[in-house]
Figure 1 (cartoon, rainbow, N blue to C red):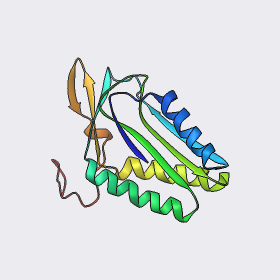
Figure 2: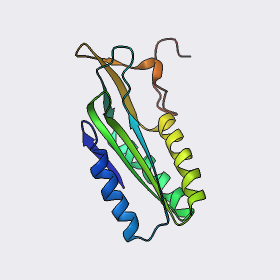
Figure 3: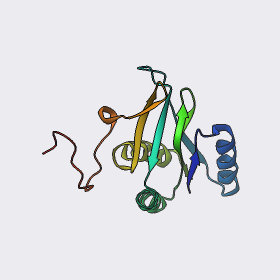
Length: 149
């Protein structure tokens, strides 16, 4: 399940709903990751743009990988502005056994950071600025930034 929300995530509400879902399916392991916006470099918030069709395809490919291992993935992400000390990203793995869930959450979150089509901006003094130094080029995007060869 892939969920997109305007603004910050309601972590407690999402966590509770996901936990209940996993209990109803009789999973033994429920591993979560929550990303929180840090206060640094005068950032008031982060802002996110999402290309939904590619994100849905990327997520579905991950869901298929998880299902081959007997697991299930869930992900929630913000669109738009997310103030410091609130959450913009949640991911969860459900599995009958903990080892698969622990391995899969690490693989999934790392690939998310490298390949999910989500663009991050810093909000400083009310102005939205592309966070290029903390961004990665998407494989096969065909876009070149200044200095790229």
